[in-house]
Amino acid sequence: MDSRFVSPGIRFNDCFFSEPIRLTAWVPPKFAGLFVILAGDPNWAPKPFQPILIGEFGNNTRELRLPSLGGGALFVAVLPMPFSTIAQRWALRQELIRAYNPVFQVHEPPPAAGLASKVEELERKHQEQTAQVGMLLANMNRFFEPQPVPPRRRIGFLPQTAPSGRHALTENGN
Image (cartoon, rainbow, N blue to C red):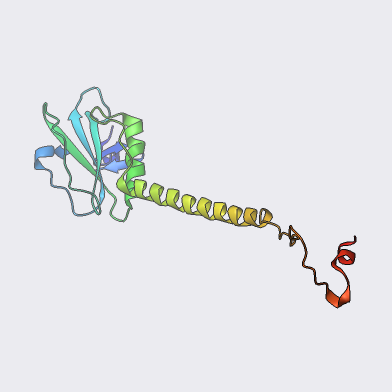
């Protein structure tokens, strides 16, 4: 194959990473992006590098800590994503992890930003449901309000004096 048609760097899915350099010589750039740690493997083509770890670096990411991978010579390639969000980088990273199954990658929890948005969504749903339950209770109270009780006749004897000169017996119907 003519070397003029081969792009510099290494391709994973539709992403063109930089040309691999030794991990010991790599300094994370100041912009955001993804990195892939590679191990030399003659069985991989078109370049003899197998991805063993895919990670993220850049704005709002925690300090970059690489696990001790041990073994022989390791390389790193970088995919610059300077104007990307954490969610965009995380989604692409997860896509690459699913596609290539890096040796040192296990299923990881979502980033803190994803968890925060999920918590906010749950809180919003909780507030909506609480408001709905409050409205239901307010409407139910209207149906179950006690009915006004008519005044009851007093138990016992009526007084001997009758209004307008009548006897109390005629007032009672007796």
